[in-house]
Image (cartoon, rainbow, N blue to C red; front, side):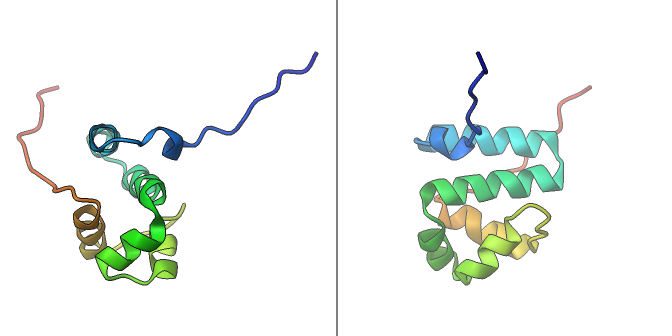
Length: 97
């Protein structure tokens, strides 16, 4: 009997603002730019990429490219997307190792 699997999609679990904040916080804690970009892309897709692009003032196709695997969004784009998601970035002292 073969094991049947399905592809994991984080967007299926990003239902509340708290879920989204925790997901992005984990990505930012990791600090890997590609992971942060991917997480922002997941959140934008969960909320509707077209609406997020409109709210951020970015062309939908450009936003897909910027937040895709291998994308390298400008910091201004990241800030626009975060704002369009109804979130804000904050700074805190780094935790001691």
